[in-house]
Image 1 (spheres, rainbow, N blue to C red):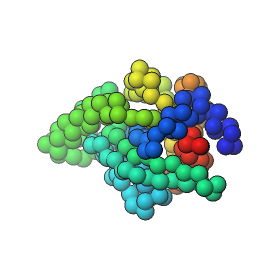
Image 2 (tube, one colour):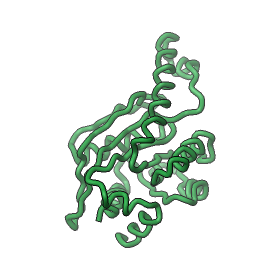
Image 3 (tube, rainbow, N blue to C red):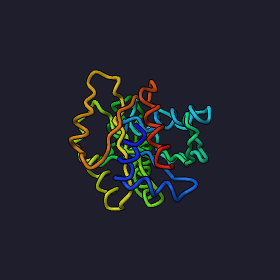
Length: 212
């Protein structure tokens, strides 16, 4: 398993990247409600004993950059990795305050949220220039062939940022990780359930392996 993962990461350009840095800046990116903040909370709680982000069933709950520094993870072999985890607002190509009205918000609240969400998207794109690597978190129950996902991947490719794709929510019956693999064959796809912690051990092994 470890050697297989190492080959993957070297192919992604992650092996040398993490080998030369003491503290990697790792960004969680993706569309709204894909599970970025849930994954951020899972990682932070597993290794720091505390959550770092607020989650909600309403899109754009995370509207500001949230970062936890000095997260140290280890495996049974004594290998470890230190990184700063950056949870970013969900990237969207369209933000309309009327969508929030449909969720029961008052007009003033909906407009304020839409404005904050728009700023959050802009900030997310700006922060890409500071990322050493990015984990793209996608909802594996949804069609990956979307304008938002293509925009995200395009921005990462243009900046030549190493990418690992997480297919989240594999605990759900509608999950289709193979469709995500087919959509982005140039990247490795790892299936997890951030909410229930499924396959997180394998996910952590991937993060640690390219530090060796």
